[in-house]
Length: 499
Ligand code: AMP
Ligand code: MG
Figure 1 (cartoon, helix red, strand yellow):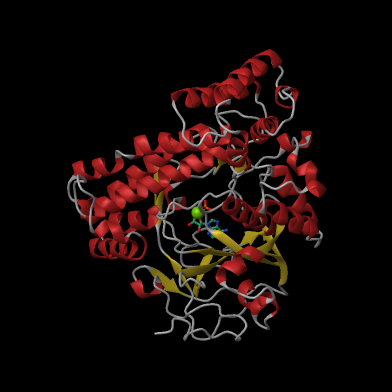
Figure 2 (tube, rainbow, N blue to C red):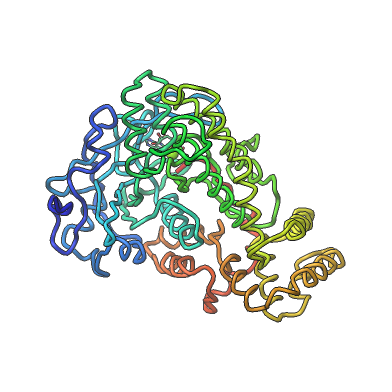
């Protein structure tokens, strides 16, 4: 059957089919409902790159119903939007039932290669899972999520994507009075560890199995034939596959200095995607213990805690899958590879940042000693790697050492580096470094600049920032300031869970 047959939008906007795969799981998994309209919506931002991946024409947003559809003010005929139920551990404690409290799945779109992508509104009104919340998202957090999604994708890190933001003057109360916005997110699936925890903790084992079979069939089909030497059934194989994807995700985060801020199990994607951008931060001055979330006083989700916390979250997933896996030994064996896969993936990422494709032990030690130097002085993370890249491109040693107070130590490290890397051809090093060390990351102050202007209905900074972050390894000379050190006021920005 043509999967587009069910779309009910104007021909120039082939948006969503009415009966998505997730919808077909049945009523135990979700509640069908319509988004709540926002008054007088307007466009805030659109990602041309995301639209292109959906196979949509550049002017898709000019389709008559596009604005209403992505503001949640109209539902395409024949589609059945829904909010899903999940649960989770928040800050290490069982939080019970949660769910899409402000997110509504519109349905699926078919990408040109045939891949089905789910389109979800975030901030589109109350659902049965809203608990004490108002079902809304504010413009500030929507801009942060939109930019971060597209930036992470461009950095080569798995993430949910963002198609667009619509806004309204509808007031929304947070610490201060703000205004509402709706982000359209895109992903093959928004299923979280917490979806499994919900069905497991409520002893709905038939649904738990249905969900696991769904995820295996659509996203991990290889788990039907467990690898040689791997104990257990397809569900143990699923756990092992999720653990490997999560290990690779954590390595990606560490390598670009990304901190999520709220790694609760309800914010962990079963596909190993970065999901639910809240008080996230890209590292400025390197501090391994840095805590980006003001609502996380103990630093549970500090930069250097992320990889072990991901393992803790995988343990929670393992526990949820126990009714299907059966033997706890099999679950533990499925998780074990995380402990080697994560450091291996991280070492490979760090070696690439040094310009080494096939690292040996000395290269790992060299990366470690640079991180040690940076940690001692809180040297800017992104800039240090970029200046090292410039040095390899021919810039004098000062380009790199001037970032450090202890220039002698930095110079000594650089000599070791130059010597150890001398056998690698310059072009080879540079090529790898230029695509491993971004010139631009979404620092908090940059998002704040885009937000401040957007609040005045000027979206030009947001546009410029998106254009830069979509190609973060390029030069963008007209925006050179964003490639430099953050301004002094950046350190006074405090991010909480409020969004
Ligand atoms: P988060 O910490 O943003 O990942 O959200 C945790 C849970 O709270 C999820 O179930 C969200 O859907 C829900 N939630 C967060 N903010 C709101 C809101 N403003 N209205 C309704 N539910 C919300
Ligand atoms: Mg969440």
